[in-house]
Length: 77
Image (cartoon, rainbow, N blue to C red):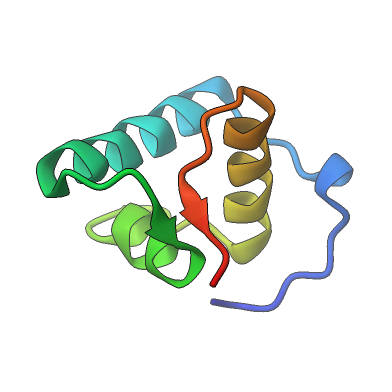
């Protein structure tokens, strides 16, 4: 992933981008029947075929949104 040192609070993500991220990651989880996914794999899943790829900072923020919703999907190992 590209390096981006922006604090998560400063990163603005549109609701459309959030929905697209959620849909793409959700489809992958349902298709592969996985409950957890490695952080390293999230980038390739959500950026595969994306017109505008997600940056590392965007992915981190979006994963925090998932965590805040108590929907853990990421295995940090």
